[in-house]
Amino acid sequence: MPGNEAGKQPGKRLRQPIVVVLGHVDHGKTTLLDKIRGTAVTAKEPGLITQHVGASVVPASVIERLAEPLKKIIPFKLIIPGLLFIDTPGHELFSNLRRRGGSVADFAILVVDINDGFQPQTYESIEILRQRRVPFVVAANKIDKIPGWKPHPDTPFIISYRQQAKWVQEELEKKLWDNVIAKLYELGFQAERFDRVKDFTRTVAVVPISAKTGEGIAELLAVLAGLAQRYLQHRLRFAEGPARGVILELREQPGLGTTADVIIYDGVLKRGDLIVTGGLEGPIITRVRALLMPKPLQEIRIAKRELEPVGEVYAAAGVRVVAPELEKAVAGAPLYVATSEEEAKKLAERVRQEIEALRIKTEAEGVIVKADTLGSLEAMVEALRRRGIPIRYADVGPVAKRDVIEAVASKEINKFYAVILAFNVKTLPEAEEEAKKHEIPVFRHNVIYQLLEDFEKWYREQTEAERRKELEQLVRPGKIRILPGYVFRRSNPAIVGIEVLGGVIKPGYPLMREDGKRMGVIHQIQDRGKTVPEARAGMAVAISIKGHVMVGRHIDEGDVLYTDVPEKHAIMWLTKYKSELSDDEKVVLKEIIKIKRRQNPAFALTI
Ligand code: GDP
Image 1 (cartoon, rainbow, N blue to C red):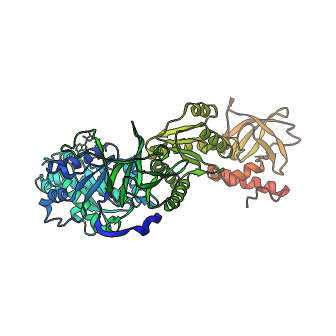
Image 2 (cartoon, rainbow, N blue to C red):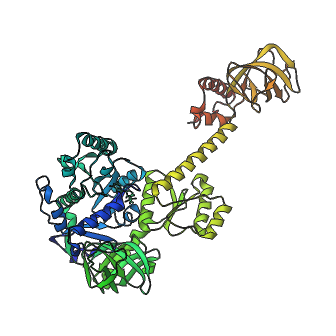
Image 3 (cartoon, helix red, strand yellow):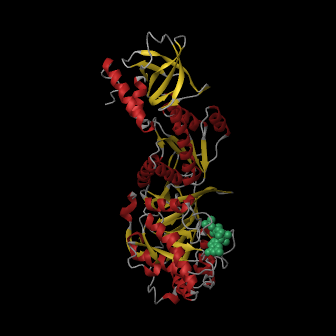
């Protein structure tokens, strides 16, 4: 909390809860937001749907009117002035609604296509909501696509549902359970259709809707509003006083320079206010030159709304702020009003610390992270930490040459982390070249989940290949016996018939006698006249042995030989690659170690 708290008196008035819409791509987030705005317009109160910058408000009176037919089922009187919806769905902007330890969003609608069920971004949305501790309701969308569904446009779900055939109702219930409620249970949430929820503090309410036909929109808004005013009153109590907000997006505006679209979640922002926000080069103290809000219009569907200057805005609001030096600001940074120069300095220090805490710069092993905003950087860092992936360097901005240099330095410690994970940012040409030269992979995506997935897949493949390669180089335990009557050549090289008693032998493996004395190296293995790459327990083959080994002098028919496993290899077998040994190899390894310890009692002692 910023230090300007003291000047504020939380009043009795409640502000609009700030609501975001999240969910998997194509599940209907945009359609739902359009519908919510459109529903309010057709409620014939266009003047009331105050359009904001980056957000729109659906007033309480509209929600009450829509919910009129439901009065018996959901009795409520709204004391909140309405709901403020963030206009851009998805998590790109959601992550910028950051507030230390949480989110500026008070509530979320998680949109799930009832027919398609949970998808990667559904899971990711829940992960983010959990992490930011944002309560949510689920909109089980596209009920109009359920086979046999007869649409009743812009009707409450309950009323439309009652008019469906029994088998259609059953189909809906089944999909609702299989694709939504059961999935929430799997994630540890208790969930229920909204009209069956007894305790909303423990159960996630699921509202079946169609963003296309408008069925269920009344309930969705009623449930949201009801829940917010009932359970979030402490958060929604409006404080008269200096504004607090967050930069959602920065925009170049001809004639005005860089402007900031800001969501104000508390207090009042006025033209001329002294404000403190943050950038990558440090905190910014500046003054509001102008505040811009959309002109009220009768028709909501006009895409490009003209903005006009206003004198002040009250939370909750979305407003475009015009002020000098905003070109140095970063999206996701907090924005506070200061009541004096002195307070501004204090707030600036707080902002500086907050932003610095999100940027990572170490000398340790780890990946390099670049993201487009402070919000997405924070989300990336948190997601990586949860997965136990170390981070060497993390910052906002395009992938630059210095990031590649960081990755090269990381490579020296652990080559599998010498990568750049670029979220929604470009790679500068110079960096591209440098990355190619040093073979630094650059992973790019605008979905965090996908970006991490891509990296993890690459990581698994690389480490597995490395493991295989290392494993290939280890001498495996093997035990053989020279078969009596099968000496083909006595020396240079010695060629004898053997049987493998246990484990494996391969060309290149050194051999030793039962007394631990080295007896040359296996040169070739032949099975019925054909050269083979190895021989396993139970096989009888011919081997040639390179080195100063003479049958009859150093070794003899009937002798038992072992592979001469070097100590380093033995330790690897006992530790990292234990699970790679077969049972008979394990037995043979024990015998080998026993032989070795006769000469060196500390041989392969791993503890
Ligand atoms: P987003 O990616 O989550 O924003 O999804 P969109 O809102 O763009 O919707 C994706 C597609 O699904 C579009 O073609 C929509 O028209 C369609 N759609 C969205 N909601 C519904 C719905 O309730 N019923 C039907 N039949 N189609 C829908």
